[in-house]
Image 1 (tube, rainbow, N blue to C red):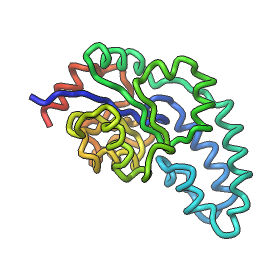
Image 2: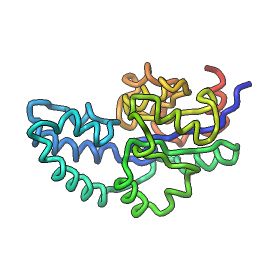
Image 3: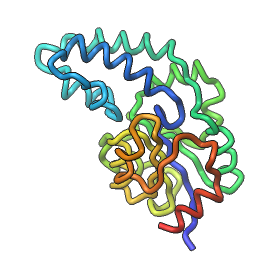
Length: 217
C-alpha cells in the first residue's frame, strides 16, 4: 500500500485567493505595454517575474522593468491575502496524519515579505516554504516539486501536488506526483487532462478522502 508523506502547495490560487487580483494588475500592465496581445495576463499565469520579463519585457521594454516592479511591489503590499476556503482545517488534518506540507511557489522573497507582513500566521501553517530563489528551473519544469520532495527526503510517488495554473499542473505531472487541480483560476474541464482530481476549495476534502483517491490511481 502506498504511503502519502508530503503535500506540496502552490501559493496564489491554491493557498490564497489572490489570482483575480493578479489578473487585474497584470491586465493593466499588459494593456499598457502589449495592447496587441489581448488576454496576455491569462497566458503568463504560473510564470515567475523573471520569466515574464524575459519573454514580454525585453528589447525596448527592458527599461520599463523597474517601473513595473515598483508597481507590483506596491500592489502586493496592499493585496488581500485570504485563504482558500477550508485550507487551514485541511492542513491541520494532514499534519495530524503525519503528512509534511510545503509551499512551492514561483513567487520571490520580496513578494513573500508582503505575505508574512499581511499574514503573520502563514509561516506556522507549513513545514517548509520554497520560493523561486530555491529552484534552478521554473514551472512547468518539475525541478521545484522534485526539490520540495527532496526537502523532506521522500519519493515523488509519495507526494501530492496542489496547483491551479497550467504551468504548475504540468510541473506536478512532470515530477511524477499525484496532482490535485484547483478550479480557482481555470475551469474544471480545462485542467482535467493535467490533474488527477479537481476541487474548487478544501471544504469537501480531508486526509482520508485524499489518500483514498490517491491510492486508487
